[in-house]
Image (cartoon, rainbow, N blue to C red; front, side, top):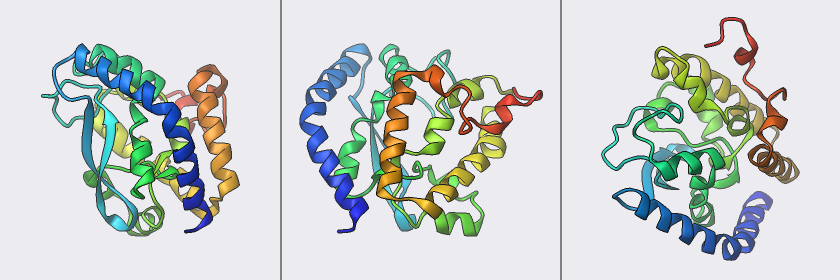
Length: 216
């Protein structure tokens, strides 16, 4: 077991006893708020291109289509889901995905197969050489991704043509220089971003096109 994997396992084992009561309460809220299961399970692309089932607290109606969610005004998002997405607590079940080895605490966020198919070959090989993570620099930089998509005339095109390439570059940066110490810094920055969103509005990790005059 390498240092990164050992770090992941130890943190999960320490965190889960504290997280489980909160996760149980949130799952109950999801069930009471709208019909359907508490968990949302979806196939994502993991290390080596292998598919795995990612787990989240369900934030959308069970009959929702597969289109990208875009902003708080998306009618498919439930009342509980709006808060869970904003707080990022819908990602908590992924601690179990980390524990079983499908994910890491920090790493490129796992994408749907249809988006991974759009990666250039060299990018795909590099990004899929590491375990996907619960958080990374791209997750911090694009914390307001749904709002960016809501402002776009064509959310799918906005994601594919503008957001996804920027994410890929941040993924490549991570793969090239990741370390346990770097992972700790990203986890702390993620916590700060969740607790103090305004702190990150002017950070260099913010998507570069957001500041351009032609931004949506």
